[in-house]
Amino acid sequence: MLICSEQLAFAAPDVIREQQQVLLRQHVDYIAGHSRFYQRMAREHGIDLRDVRCYDDLAELPFTTKADLEQYGDEFLCVEERQVADICLTSGTTGLPVAFMQSRDDLERLSFNEQLAFTTAGLTADDRVLIAAAIDRCFMAGMAYFLGLKKIGSTVIRGGSSSVSVVAQLIERFRPNALVGVPTLFLALAEILRQKGIDPRQCGVKKLVCIGEPVRHQDLTLSVLGERLQGQWGAEVYGTYASTEMATTFVDCNCGCGGHLPPELMAVEIVDNQGKRVAAGEAGEVVATPLQVTGMPLLRFKTGDVATLYRDPCECGRNSWRIGPVLGRKNQMLKYRGTTVYPPAIFAVLQELKEVQAFYIEVRDDYALSDQIKVVVGSSCSELTSHHIEELLAARIRVKPEVVIEDVDTVRSQTMQEDKRKPVTFFDYRTSGVGGSVV
Image (cartoon, rainbow, N blue to C red; front, side, top):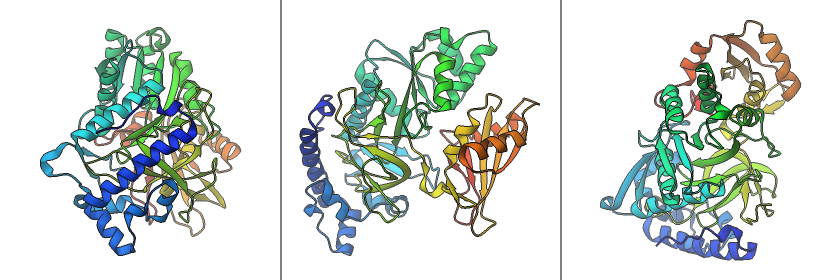
C-alpha cells in the first residue's frame, strides 16, 4: 500500500530521513525478492541487496543505466503481466524508447506524485488548468498531469501540444488560470494570441508550470526565458524536472529555490565523473532511486542529467531536498578550444534576443581537442546578423561558434518532430553522438 503524506516535506529533517530510510529498506527488499535483473546483478558483483539499510549504503551498489533498460527490459518487471495496468514509453531522446510497465499501485503513486507537485506550485481545486503536453503515444507526462490534477480536484482541459493554434483557441474559450507545458510553446502561444489582437496578460493565466526546459539560472534566478514568459503572460513561472524512469517530479514552490524532492517517493544522489558523491551545492550527474514502485523498480539509475542538489531548508517551510535546474545532459557536453559548455548555456543567450524565434545546434568532432559547433537560428528580422550573435555568445559564455541564420519555418521544420514531445534542439554528429537529442 502506498505510504504518502502531503506534510512529510514540512517535517523536521531527521523525521524525513528516518521515514525515507524505512521506505528505502522496503524498496530494496522488494527488489531483492522480485527483480531478475537486480538478482543477477547482485550475484555477479557478489553483494547482498538486503545489506542496504540506509541512504549511505546505496553508494555500495552499482549504477543502473539506460543501456541496461534497453538490453534487459523484461528482467526489470517485478509483477505478473496480468498485473500491468499501463505501458509507458520514454521519449527516446538518447536512444530507443524504453517501455515501462506500471501496476495499478504505480498509477496511484504517479497520481500522488503529481498531486504533490502541483500542490507545491500552489494549484488547488479552485483552478482551471490547461495541459499543453502530449497525452497520447504512450507518454507518461500528460497522463500523469491529468491524474494529479484530478486528485487535487482541479478542472482539467486536455489540450495537448500537437497544435499551437488549437491550444490558443482553448485558452480563448475556456479561460484557464494555469498552463502546463513546454516554455517555448508558451512563447509561441503568446505570439499567436497577439497576432489575433489578444493580450496574453489579459487571458486570466496566473501560473505557468514549465516542463522539459529550464527556466532558471544555476543561481536559481529566472533565466531570460523565464523572464520573457513572466513578461508575456504576467504570470508566475514554475520550473519542474522529471523523467519517465524516475516517475517522480521535482517542482518549484513560490520561493523559486529549486524543485522540491518528494522524500517518500525518491532518493537522489549527485555524483562526479568517477561515480563518487559530490558535496552539497556542487553540480554532478543526477542518480535516482524511485521509491514505492512495484512494476519496474530501479536502483541508482543514472539519468545523464547534470544538476545541483540543495539540502538546506526552503523559505516556504519545507525541509525536503531541492534540485536546481538541469545544466545539460552529460553526453551533450561540448568542448570548444579549452572551454566546456552545455547546449542550454548557448540557448540561454539566444533567448535574450527577441528577434530569435527558433534555433538548434549541430555538433561534429572534426578536431581532436575541440568540437565543431554550428548554431542555426531562425529569424525574420533582416537586421539581425550572424556576427552579432557570435559576438554575444563570445561575451556571455566564452564560446564563439559558427552561427547561421535561416528562415523561421525552415528551422522549426527541423526542431518540431511529430514523434517527439519537445523541440529537438541538439543534433550530435560526433563519433560518439546519438544523432539528435531533446534539450
